[in-house]
Amino acid sequence: MTNPQIKKYDICIIGAGLAGLAATMFAANQGLSCAQVGHTGEINFSSGHLDLLGVHPVGEKKVLTDPWAGIDALVQAIPDHPYAKLSKEEIRTAFRELLSFLKATGLTYHRRMNHNSTALTSLGTTRQTYCVPHTMWKGVAALKKKPPCLILDIRGLKGFSARQITTALQRDWPNLLTARISFPGMDHLNEVYMEHMANALILKENREKFAQEVRPHIKDSQIVGMPAILGLYRTQEVVSDLEKLIGVPIFEIPTIPPSVPGLRLKEAFERGLRAKGVQYFSQTRVLSVRGNGERDFEIDIGRKMTEDTVQARGIILASGRFIGGGLYADRQRIKETIFDLPVHQPGSRAEWHRREMLDPRGHAVNRAGVEIDDAFRPLSSSRRPAFKALFAAGSILAHNDWKRMKCGAGLAIASAFGAVKSFMNICR
Image 1 (cartoon, rainbow, N blue to C red):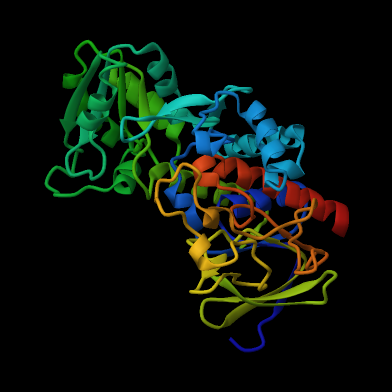
Image 2 (tube, rainbow, N blue to C red):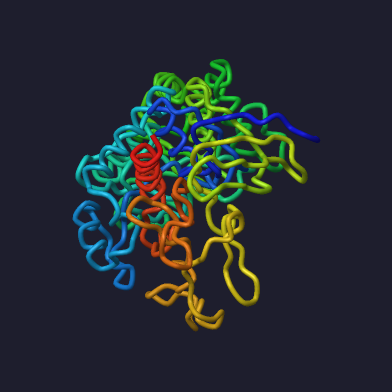
């Protein structure tokens, strides 16, 4: 498209993962006009859990029951970690606002305010997490009380085995049964897909057929665990109806990605943000940015060539790491892909990784990223803000090893909150 019409917004958010979506939500809640640019990102790979901080120190593999005390220890040990840029009350406020937003879209989460919860994985292992989807919350209680429980899997569903889960848990939870059922209408297929089953269960007639498959296997079980397929939308309705039809409580267990809980998060954000007037430039990327170093950016957006140009008074960079496309590695160094910002990284590629893949200290490359000031503005090579109105959030930030620390969602949510707060302070 030649000479695209320039559209004006208060802020442009680059990235459509959890950090980008959260930043857009915080900005829209402040009454800002928002443009969001980016591919779906890594949110489709989410288990649905929202971690705050699960492990610290990572070298000791210390699992945390109290994430807030863990944050105190973390920022003392790593003062450049993004959590150190915010108070704990600000992080609490960020979670509270985000959970309220999701609940209004129909996606409800539960949490213990001051502690992590222990949740099941598809491998039969357990993990610490902070916020648990409504569809999985009864599994948290069941894991603690260990009543007689039936674990279901589905013929043709890859990567989820009830037998594997019960074998891993049998020492600590002996009252487990397993069953494999066919999904109604898909029993002729060699392989079934979670998204298709989740869509099917939105219809009441399909829930009735599904319950008929489950009921003969209940026996003495007091609760049923199954793969996370209980509806892409209206999950509380789906769960409540199936519990009545089956006769016992049910809960979901996360599956391997891409996952239905991740799709639910994405769809919930998009429904809620469209209602707030957010303009999406979905499945596109930023091709170029022009700015004077102070404020007012012009951003060219498209797939291979410019399809739209937007003007914004500020930008939040939430483009992710290597999978999201925010960072790129060649044989010499790691680069930031849009603004060519300096990237904190080891001096040479030979230092990126330790000799052992599972070294408990982790790998230096995992903490590579963009460094920021206390206002979440990326720093230039002179250690000053690269632009007055450019902010950054999410996994692109340096000094975090979110996968091993189990703080990915918390990092995304908290830093998005901090970036929007700083935009409001600096650019309004």
